[in-house]
Image (cartoon, rainbow, N blue to C red; front, side, top):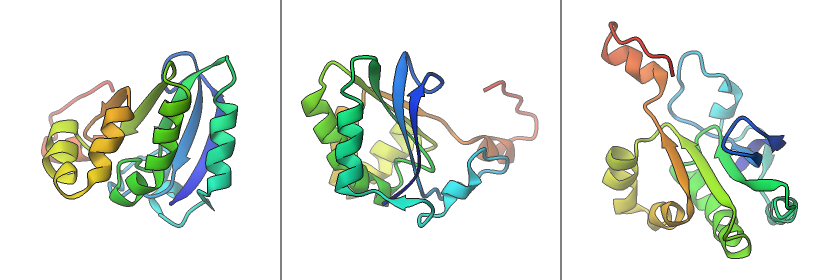
Length: 152
């Protein structure tokens, strides 16, 4: 797995001050995406054990309320495999801190309905993620109905 960016002191992607990891790779390819460079799974830098260790050390600082996973798409199958160790170790070390994950895959239809049936990593991640913000990407909503108007 590669990652596109790490944002320290993030106050926009969950409550409090967060440490945010932007993974690379997304197959949604939404029109108007604010991070289209992250669609490419090879974009950015390799997510190594050293990077994982660094994140776990940094997020331990008392001012961090938790870890946020964004992308790209954290719940892409290859990214799930890459994130499982980080998420598992994070919850072991910091059970009082939260993990937020933003995904374009829907919890019931995609994660439980498809991925959990073929990938054990899906359920292992979902057991440890405190808040999953799942939503149909805007590009898919627009294709379904030209009349749909949304503010989110």
